[in-house]
Amino acid sequence: MAQGSTDEQLQPIAGLLGAFLPGLGHLWLGEKRRAILIFLGVMGMFFGGVAIGGIDVIDREEDFWWFVGQAGVGPTAFAVDRIHRSRLTSADPPPNADPAWFDTNTPGRVKSLGHPNEIGSLWATLAGMLNAICVIDALIHAPARRREELAPVEEGSAA
Amino acid sequence: MTTLAHAFTLAYRPFLDPIPGVAHWWWLTIIPLAFFISMTYKAVRINSLDNMRRYWRKVAVMTLQVIALMLALAAGLHIVVEFIAPAVG
Image (tube, rainbow over all chains, first blue to last red; front, top):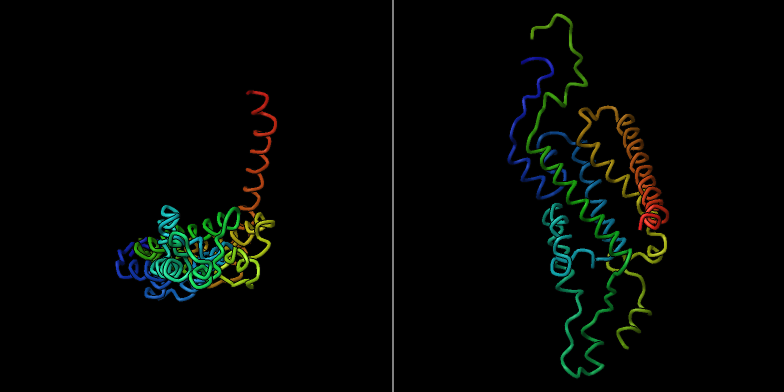
């Protein structure tokens, strides 16, 4: 093998694992440190966005196109959306609802609006898009390129 | 009205409610945003992670570059909106 060749290999399992959980694909490829950094970076952005804007930033129904980007994080986004929609979304009150109905059917959910919602949505969507880059990197893996910086080219070596 | 009363009396719930005060200081969130973007991007782009000091130095440089670019864009847009657009329009 020529020194410095990229020898790109298609790693579908690594790609699938990375799409399931950020960093898992690189962990499967044996790049533990890279996997940890990817996980911390992507999940830090995703949950940082949820922390900033509240769980309302993950909303498949009201913010569908934002959710398309957020889904790049994987099943985590769908799980958060499921929690949001099933437990925290206020139900539509029946006509002429008794005030007591609101006491039991609205668990104090605060809808995020304005800048908190915008910034939180942006964080979570960028997390999904960055994970897409990480998945592509795991999918098209070039182990020789990853070792280039450690192995200097020797003079006179065979091409 | 009961719902509104609940909204003002319930304590802040992390990850469920927006962080209090972020509506005023939202522009500061660009700093950790740039850091996380740089951290993830450099984790993929740097071939060797054996030298972690080099990695974190590159992350810091890219973070500063992103913030500087955002500030430059904001300044440029401000000039366009406040001076150029009114003069042209």
